[in-house]
Amino acid sequence: MNVQASPESGITTQVGITRGYMSGFGNGFETEALPGALPVGRNSPQQCPYGLYAEQISGSPFTAPRTTNERSWLYRIRPTVMHWGDFRKVEAHLWLTSPAEAIELPPAPLRWDPIPIPAEPLSFIDGIRTMTTAGDAGSQAGMGAHLYLATRSMQDEYFYNADGEMLVVPQQGRLRFRTEFGIINVEPGEIVVIPRGVKFAVDLLDGPARGYLCENYGGAFTLPERGPIGANCLANQRDFLTPVAAYEDRDAPGTMLVKWGGTVWAAEIDHSPLDVVAWHGNYAPYKYDLRKFSPVGPILFDHADPSIFTVLTSPSETPGTANIDFVIFSDRWLVAENTFRPPWYHLNVMSEFMGLVYGVYDAKTGGGFQPGGASLHNTLLPHGPDMDAFEKASNAELKPHKLEGTLAFMFETRFPQKVSRFAAEIPALQKDYGRYGRKLARHFNPPANT
Ligand SMILES: O=C(O)Cc1cc(O)ccc1O
Ligand SMILES: [Fe+2]
Image (cartoon, rainbow, N blue to C red; front, side, top):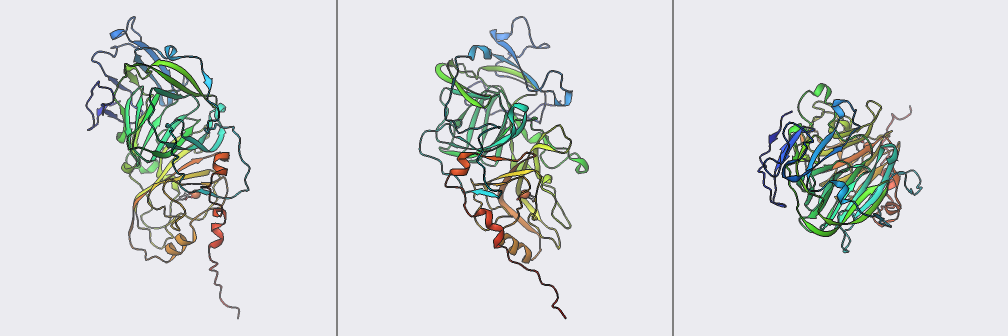
């Protein structure tokens, strides 16, 4: 496959300064931070260049078909076994993994105000708060929907997640992900995906940060099929960016955090494990700018299913039944004639966790769905536009209208989502949201009896 340098490229070995990315989705990339660090023509030479260790990370079973086979070869100062220590459990972490404690609530749609970022020192990992869990991580099915609330960078702390792939949706504050594979900078409007097992640390570039995290226990996120749409539009492969190699050669006491089996574990470490000097393969973190998504929609009448806005999908074993769909609602023109243009009222066998990065979501113009907030429309629970959105859209003049400055998203899973104690007990939970539908007016106007 082709590897192109993105305009942002420019390989430098200086840690923290690297800005280079390679473009493409699922490519077989190769990159080195020191010239000649990557062995040529073989994966495991008797001695690697510069005295590096070779290490493979497998993201799929060895024998997975080529289309889903994922692995990378890392050439590093120390192999991961040398990062290992005596792990202790990090107690009372608010990061839950399915099956987890769930609060039984009456069936109703739920919505949360933006959750304030606390003043206390919280790293990206400390600040993960589970909202819902679904499926069963041990069976590699389902997901966790989390928020992160961070107030400090990770200093000599490193993390990896053996339980799931992590899709991060920043809502406030730019982040720098220093990963084993290189450096990824993201801002609200972009996402970053960190595959299982990939070590990283997160720096805050603008102070306190908030956002959403989808932890995918199932099949790795991939691009949805485009069917009759053809070879272009939606999320285009070339807009996915994977970092060029960059390494830290740093000896300092620190902490290695590992999420494994639903628990966050911590061990002492005396050096940075982000010490990969060169790598090649197709298992690597990437980022994507959601503003590059090219939406396709109805250009004459009706409102299409939201699947047309799928950015990434985590497949299950059942064709057409996603473990997770990551769907966005971004700037676009509404042009449909004689059409109620916002989302229709519906009940969905998949469950829908939604967040708002910025702007106003067209189904909820009544003011209750705020940037940084969240909603949960669980399996087969009725939902749709609030009264304000319904009345406006039913009476609007149907000239072409552009939705601008808006970015909402949905983590949609085939599994019911269970609500965490944190989500059920925080004051941000809107007590009256379950009754928003009752505010809709009755409009039935049959002909008068004669
Ligand atoms: O419920 C929601 O707001 C998400 C959604 C949007 C849409 O355009 C159609 C269906 C749907 O579930
Ligand atoms: Fe919906």
